[in-house]
Length: 168
Length: 106
Image (cartoon, rainbow over all chains, first blue to last red; front, side, top):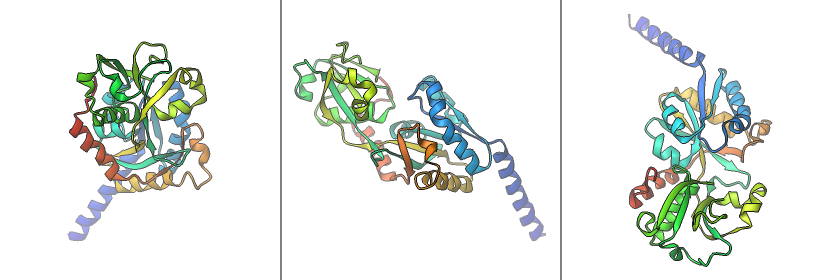
């Protein structure tokens, strides 16, 4: 009786995995490129993963961040930057790999820019001025710069005359 | 762009943006006031309830790209390969988010 139970359990696990896998997987990409461009860039990767897993890996791209976040629960794997992953994915997803850029780094940096002809020389000079962050949920253009400002004694909510998100 | 044309006094960009040739016309109109510390870049995350065998296959496949003959897989991306992530760096994000109350959005 025990052997039959173990056998049935094994068969059910194998069937369950087969059923799961037979439908393939869905790979989503955080919207940092136009959808057509993202398809062009990441189709070779989804095809590569399809071969590695032996089942189709459907590439899913998005027009905007709202669509992306609403669609997360339908995805099996996601390419996204670390801050976005921290905000949206850590309950249901776990990091498997981190991308290495062409300089051999796995990190990104943000930068605070001003017009070349502006009088500002330090971050403190920006108090009372307007500031445009990159897309919210972006590590380098939002999270890292917010931290940089705070660590230099600037509270973006209080110390700028205007803040917005969505820059390059 | 909005900073370059004067719509905003200052702004945030990815440091790599400043080095990309296609942005040179914009970049020549701005200067950098400060750089941030490096933070973890792009991750591939996998649903936690997927079988371990799938996780292993994905990990092996992706970490094998750089040394294998599949480098064309990434030729259109900004990346040259994938490595094992340092989970402490990712957890550091959470620590600083809480410390400075970084908003979910503006």
